[in-house]
Length: 169
Length: 169
Image (tube, rainbow over all chains, first blue to last red; front, side, top):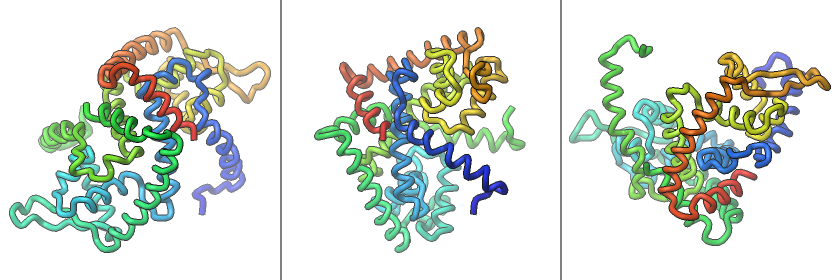
């Protein structure tokens, strides 16, 4: 149920959002002016458009992109320390702890104390975590395939190389 | 002043953040695994790294990237309707109204009622808005020049073309 008391207003708002969503994708260069040639701005627009697809694809799994990325790294390297996973993903400690708390509450991941250093925790997926990750991975792969179609042959490798050059400051 | 009551804890937290920030930039492919080949993920990492630079560059102007983009479009096309600027930037109406409210409170932008349709408002920069935009533009241009150095000759045009292909769903 919607959190709106006034259903008429809520419906009107959702009708208004439809054309905006369509125009969202346009990013008319005549109106954007110099902003259209700004790499920072274009990165943000591309990221938001791709995340919209990923969020839509993973909605029924109730998994946000950040949660997917954490499950993906733990699944790839089970037993890594919490601090190692956070550093690899570039997530600040406090935010990362909250993320893991959420995944642990949903029984998708679990922390196990490090026998050599009780201040450290190693991260593992549960069986349910493995299952949800596999489903999310299939959906993300479908989105990535659509991006390949847009980018054309060789586009992915070229784009990834440029993006990581920018990401590694 | 920090909103923390416990200054020792706040200082300890900020010390802890320093090495994480450095590792943030690394994004070790051995730890990231398949995620390193994911365009959605690489877009997010590149966008965050570039925005970090823009936010740092514009910090003394107290201007966030979204505010900069709004000032840039109004400065490029003064007199556009509020709904046109929001659509060009792909910002939902409610969020856009809040953004303009903030810029108007700081006397950087102003709304003028459309004489032909009193439900519509045209947007203009104030003299102070023009001034802040020029200063922000110089700082953003400096960041973009550093990105050019990373991307090499022809990189900008190639990257922009690919990003806008992804942004226009």
